[in-house]
Image (cartoon, rainbow, N blue to C red; front, top):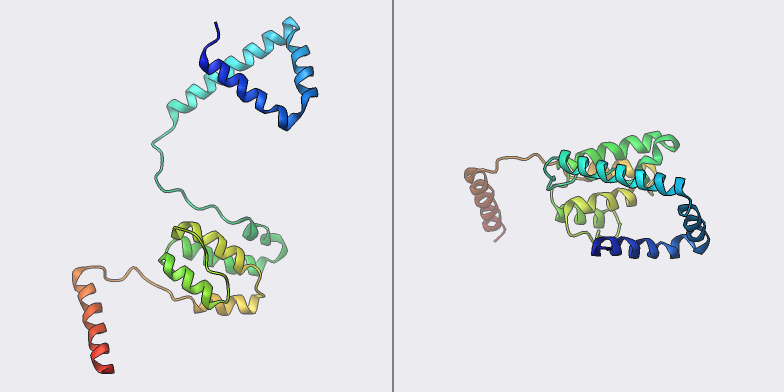
Length: 178
């Protein structure tokens, strides 16, 4: 008797008809009718299932934060324009390390200051690749100037005393303006 998961698998296979067309399905049906092919297919499916079980058991805990992948526009520059690649790669590394533009707001402001459209990303991590993709279009001289204009931040003093200092200094500046 066929179980629901087996029927679901057959439905998924049938959905591949759109991708491959009817001819490969007909050829596969004819091939499966031979005893040798049936045995080979059976062995292959058992092996795939065993491998899937092993990988599920050996997987470690899922990481909550994925490392951003290097944008394709950047990797494609490596052989074509190595100088621009190095500039952008260094900037990309600084961005991912939060050594520069540590917040999503900073990235958006930087993009606008550079004359680029504001990234529509909902998180800082997702805004990095689109920013790099847009910066690729600039000539090296402009790119250097734009990267240098990005404010370099350190993690600074995030203690209560550090925040108090920031707030009080801001209040003093506001009082001086009045």
